[in-house]
Amino acid sequence: MTKNPFTVGDLLSAYPPPIRNIVEKFREIILKTAPGVQEKANRGWRSISYRDVQVGYFCGIFPFEDHVDLIFEFGVLLPDPDGILLGDAKQVRYLRFHAVEEINEGELGPLLKAAIDLPPQHAARRGLTQSRLSSDQPGSSKP
Image 1 (cartoon, rainbow, N blue to C red):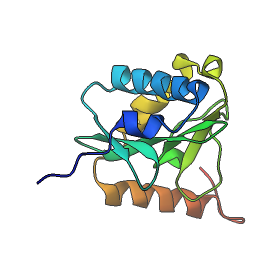
Image 2: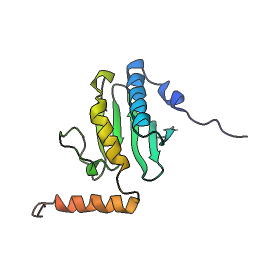
Image 3: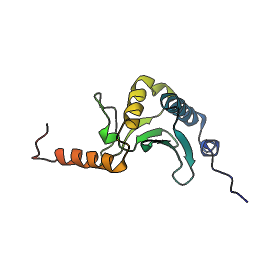
Image 4: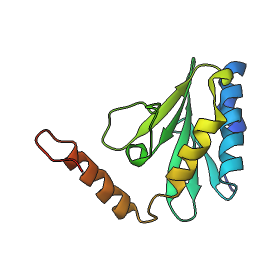
């Protein structure tokens, strides 16, 4: 006997329509930008994760009662000339939205593409992250 899988619909059923609308817009943009990615609803994390065949897990959608976060696993490595990515963790960065009207596909598309274009080896991405952290330390010389 197999367990019924936890679906995106199961996850979203716990949230009000405005939050579901944001999540659905993110899903649309992610699947349009990276059509070959794998989407998985996660019961424990209450999220939707996205994996690329080459780079593995690269982003996730995390709904909350009053907003939705789109997180990038190695967001610290993504180009962010306009400073739209939030967070100060060692590697994760995110975007937060309270309404579907706030979503700008023109900003999200390049971030998603950059996340998928990161080196395919997890160790290489971690190395880049560590290198970036070292260069951000006071007294270090930045290029």
